[in-house]
Image (cartoon, rainbow, N blue to C red):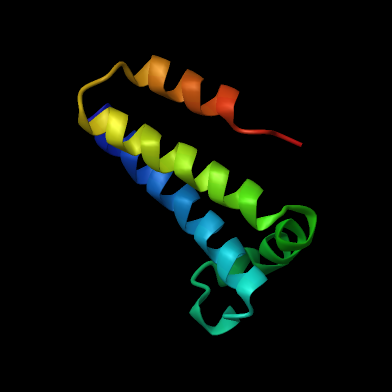
Length: 86
């Protein structure tokens, strides 16, 4: 059950990063997280596409690792250490 909740949370975070990429590409009509559009706009300006893609890749890798029964704590620790937090 914990893994399912973590996976759902990671999917939500990945969706935000997807919206940032869409914003950077000018496809704003496809953004689904309209309630945080100001933050999406700000992150779109602050971060490069490569940085966003790297973060998204780390998140998706963490989801795959969770699905393979890896340790939840180690998976999240690896994800957090890989993400650059400002």
